[in-house]
Image (tube, rainbow over all chains, first blue to last red; front, top):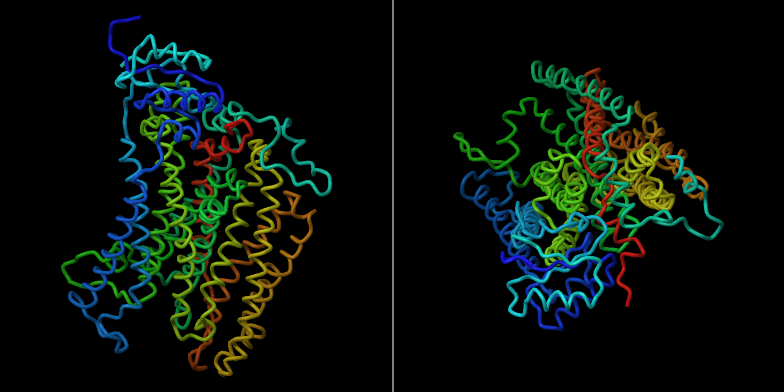
Length: 178
Length: 461
């Protein structure tokens, strides 16, 4: 046991069922600052550590609104104010013909907001993260499942938390250095 | 390759082939797909194909360079046929691109899990096909360096702006949005797989490069939660988008008053044709890919059969549209529309029309037979025929309507030149080059999504 501060304790499991069981128990035991690491999206793992909602949808809606208003205003400004051209006697503000571009701009705004909003909320790109220091963590993107209880959690104690994790029979428990 | 050969044997009657070959685990899936990228031994055929396509790209560059020097007069276009190969090829390529988004977005929303094996390279195919498509409108302006302010609302010293009442401008927005959204969809799908490649790579340089693109992805449950939301939202956004793109392309024609173009059924007809040719292209790429890289466990007969069924269904919609085209000509009771129908059947280009009926309606009927749908070779050949047929369809639409419109005194013929052919072949080479680069350097099958299909990936209660 070292005196240096650690990021947390990382337990490795070889199947999703054990991981979810341990994560649920940890949440039940009052741990909140923790995360599960899985090689594919595992809804149950997110639910087990208490993650239910996220703000990606809201950001996407805002992006769609901005794209829609921006697209329509652009066309209005160009066709009515900046460069009015009489095309076949149609009114300058011929709104039905502005709908396709407005729609495309709304989809564009929403998609950019969804992707970049998701990355921003996830804090990516992030070149360094302590969890990568853990042994065998490269398997998190291959075939292993990890549960990390972080040292910042008020309930965290190296000895007690390790004992707690031990009861769920992980393949390995390691201390994650910073 | 040999160990996968048994997969191609048809299961007994009444049992459908599996979506994923037996005996695969999280470990084998990862190693198998990542292995194609991380291997030190690039197969010989890869070099051969790349060398050949680079040569064809040389042809494309020559054709474009000469075009920029001499102008669009080197092509066969003239009055009355001002839209020739460039628009035919544009519509053809953009149609091919449609299957990618259909597979990745619409089939995702309908929870069709079989899409998972083919969505990644279908998305790549979309992006590369849209790139080829975009090339044509750009170079057909003759002076593409000026096209920026013709196509996009870019402030300029002359104070001129695009005409937003024109479908051609809608098209610019539709195609560029489609390209961007497809690229985003493909890009976020690749992030977790880049992380896998980063973690599996042996050499430091390779690890760094994939690490850069993985952006520090670590598979956190909190991240996955937002990731899945974003992915589903993108799918929801891409679904109306993909239907809008070819609809807008069809409005380029339908909003005009030219006989044969001025019809309301063009948007759905174009979308069905796009999906028809797109799935044919998916098969043209998937069948050699699975054979060359031994991916029969991931792209099984089930996938090929399903693609065959989609082609059959969309092909029937296209056939219905051909019938409707004739019917509308008759029902309009307008002499110009009737003349158009007559021109299709008896005009100077009727050979093209009958070839198109053969390629798009008659030959695809073989897909009714399970034996055809279960034979990779037969599917490959039918797909090639459909690809030719769809190109002919666009040729018939573009050229035949323009060639004979209202005034017989302005009728004329369209003769394409060797530069037209070189540009078309050149884009095929460019497409092949991009695709082979993609399968060498990126996981051509989505690894993380394939993992979710495995039985051991589920949480047991």
